[in-house]
Length: 235
Image (cartoon, rainbow, N blue to C red):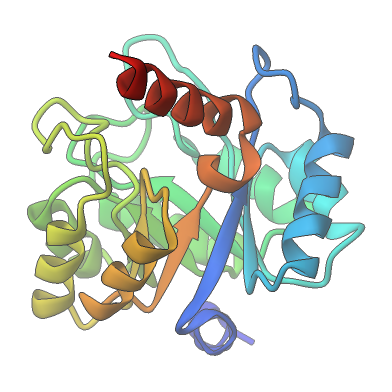
């Protein structure tokens, strides 16, 4: 199958369903490929349609325990650049080799360390890995540019994580709605989804699927929300 056929197969799997992001960074208590694999298995048993995972080691470990599709990415900081989600072709190739089914990339308007335009970067990933590309964006304009650059999916992941996008505690459902109106490319909602009600609101706004991460897989963040609620109650 080519990347378009793979994208269609992935869409059939996730349409109207939940994707769970299983990620932990080095400073977090659940960091480690084996732990993330167990987290992905728990998500699969709970009914997740797909998994989003960071780094080749985590993707490989998760692929070993679940049969669900995996959106793979590789967070890497490169001096002089703000983009860090799969910033180079080499990072994409490592994720593909680890067993990912879709490659997520930073598709914001910010400069990247290679390829002067997004279309060339996505074309290189398609050509080299044969996999669909999910473009993480922060604005409508970036979503439109990602579609023009032949991204297979557009996700709202980076709204609130660029200085020029809305800074808010909850998800950017308005962006989901706006992108769903102007794009033919499937829109995936992601970013600060904390409740089932927010997830269904994103689906109602036009998202084909919703990614939830911290609200399921980061117990320190879940605990903080309960603690904060109690503190407010006690004031």
